[in-house]
Length: 265
Image (cartoon, rainbow, N blue to C red):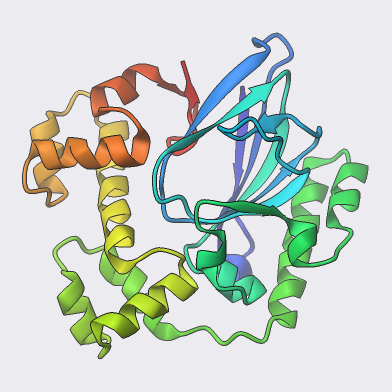
């Protein structure tokens, strides 16, 4: 497996976390299973070869598609070799870039052409150079940001920052943003696609997953308490929900450089 991570231009960083290239080696086995781990973020995926990847229900993905945030774990299967470029967005990108309510794509995907008529897929297919493809994607997103008249709500960015602080409760965040519980729920579902509580849980789980990934020999009790879980059993419960395995099973079966999209063996 070949993986390349590319940083976005500065003006795209509020919307794009990174671009990624994921490509199989020709000598690899014909069938690959990848685990989708919840991280609260949407994405844009381009497949060089049609019908490379299939959903857990056996449906082929389009050449170029948008996907929303995942509320729980899932999996994709690739048959034969694969060659894909993906855009890993910031949590609020669907609303910010396309003006769409993010919850419309939660746990789902759609061909980009169904959201916006464009020739981006044809241009990507015509290019044989990775840097050129990244440039095409960057230019497309830049132009879409210019066309989109949605005005970013600063409270969404504040909420995301607050959720990175595990010592801050939803009630405290709600008070700081001067929003009622129902108003906060609407704001976050519209802009991020998840309920505030689920987004908070996924953020905490992701923090624990990063610690497990970088310190795999660390005691699970330590990881749980470092990330403000009540106890180890609550941590393992969230891990099963968002990764589809226990932490120990995950370490044994997840391969590859992408902790949120590992090849599952």
